[in-house]
Length: 246
Image (cartoon, rainbow, N blue to C red; front, side, top):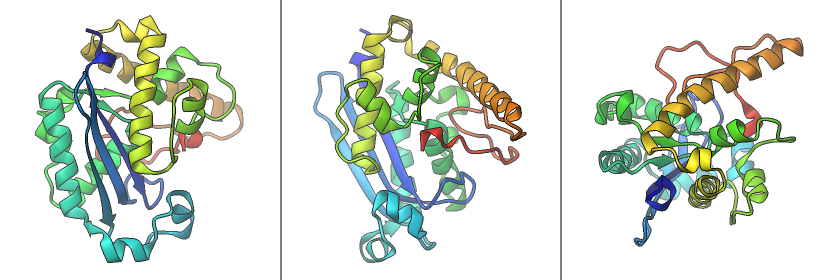
């Protein structure tokens, strides 16, 4: 059976901003789907412990009043999210995350911030991670796609339903559907062993970052672009955000 016909753990977060080192989770969703079994989904409204900027609320519609009234403590949410993803990975169910470098690194930093054992440590290090990132995949198979490459636009390009962009539940399922469609569409992706595909994405993500960095340099913007994937190691120098996926 191809990986895209098996069980998939779709993961998405919405945050206070785009800085992987300092911004916080405000909503999250994990949906275990596919494989001919019923979907199992969890979602969280999180009190991040810091004010949510107005520009972030404008994107995901989560207000300070909402998280203060109904949000659960960040440490509790991060523990639950991390435990569910670790359990999925222990069963060799891949995590599907669009622009996963952002979501998984934010989760990692939140865990460290709140004294929660990070996902990477629960699975025995980076070799225990198993991630599929439709953003990285599309940049590999459609290198010259014009326009922005965010989840909404790629779902539209692949004729994948996305009901309510910037809602964590909707975005998680959209990413899983997108990964499934790409696996079926491109044999060079769908026919790979899931572990091989994960390793290939590490190299592809690095090459993509180097290419974007060269482009920035040519445009007179000598900025460093993060190439580590799917989790940016602690202590990496601050890199320019690739906002093409935002």
